[in-house]
Amino acid sequence: MTKNSQATAQQAYRFAGASAQYNNALRTTSPLAMMVIAITRTRQHLRAAKQHREEKRFDLERQEKSIVVNRLRALQAIVSPKSAPELSRDLYAFYARMIRILARNGRKTPLEERYEIVDRNLETLAKQWQSFKSVNSQAAGQQQVRGTRHIVEQVL
Image (tube, rainbow, N blue to C red; front, side, top):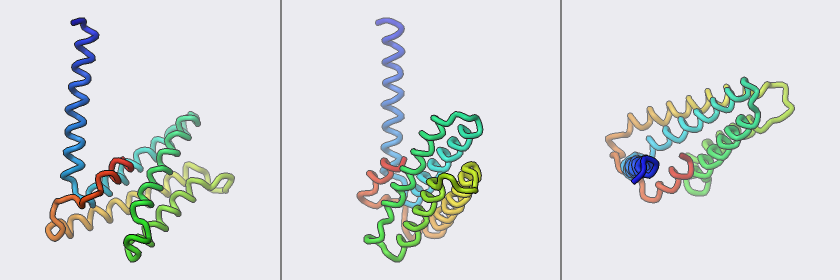
């Protein structure tokens, strides 16, 4: 066995271990925690897009912005108004507003400022999900709702 093949085998072993941990986390994480994670990851991509814009790397900014919009659409799809109208109507509209803010080209508000607006709104939403989780953790338990794994994989 050569050094290169040993390194490849070690890398594959580490990937398998990380993959197993990720899959285990998906099975054991509560839906509320998953929402916080999904929103946090979206905010990370949003901040990366802003950073790329400041550094005038517009191709990388466009990629990150595309990821953010896709994640917002996935979060929006999770709360379809047909499945839970009393909860989803406002959340669905919230994600639609965040997408519109990012998509407005040629407006007076600079894109950097719009990134900050969306980031603040997502941060507030994540905090609200987190506080809801801490209030209802005993009542809801720590089990994941069946059928939510594909949603998390799509958003994460």
